[in-house]
Length: 189
Image (tube, rainbow, N blue to C red; front, side, top):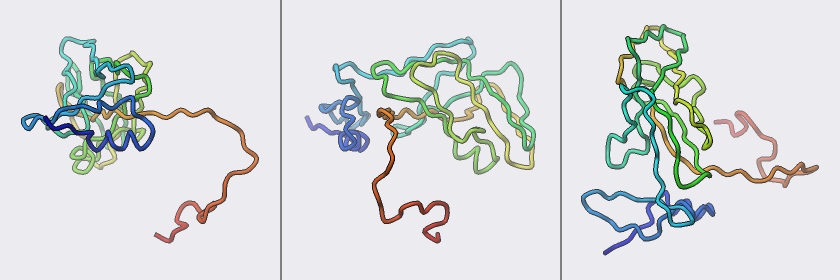
């Protein structure tokens, strides 16, 4: 058997986050799936609770998709008017089982955002580890055309990521860098 750490796994080790990495995940040429475990050796799982029997379980669409597609759960079509923001229910709640240092991030689906101007109103939604309520996506229509969402339409994607929460310490001075306080547009690009 061959073993691999995976790209994310290697990055996690470099960032000092080894508890998400299963160091001995066999390569399966058919699936090529990497399983992550916690520091106690427990496999990480994304637990999904259906709050509505019509809800669609979030799913990755390809073998190497980073995100789990979130789908609308609605009794009738929802019209998102041009320039409007609408909260779209998914009918599911979630828990990241196995590691409390993980967050769910809600990103736009690239096709909806680029073709129709539909994306999360807050750019990236954050689902904290301890949140157990329904996953609701606030979608904003930045186009000039109304957009209709039907039950089961894929509206956003959920990506899981590690979270770093260091202790906050007030400092009188910060270390110097070449960039210093150069902010917006400071590199002339």
